[in-house]
Length: 138
Image (cartoon, rainbow, N blue to C red; front, top):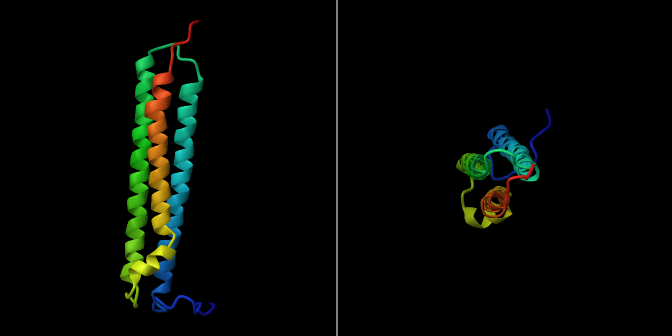
């Protein structure tokens, strides 16, 4: 096994595999978020592009449900990422200036991205897509 890199001076050498585990889980959470977000957007696109020949209120309810599902997905993913970040911070041996160091970490920016995308999709679904659903005239 290779020696641990010297650039990770904030951690003890025996702690680095745990930190690496948390880093991998953060990126796995982001990957799952992106996949599920694309699935929700695909479902929203399907509901809005196809002509509604049945109950228009049920389609609007499905669009609203997709918006709430997206918001809850963003909230859950953000919480999971923050828990992994908290586990990393607890393992730091040098805890001075953590606030200053946090501006170079990717996790807070991931949380802002995740919540921003989730709020944007929910807003578009509820206020833009839902009211535009019309019954097809077959």
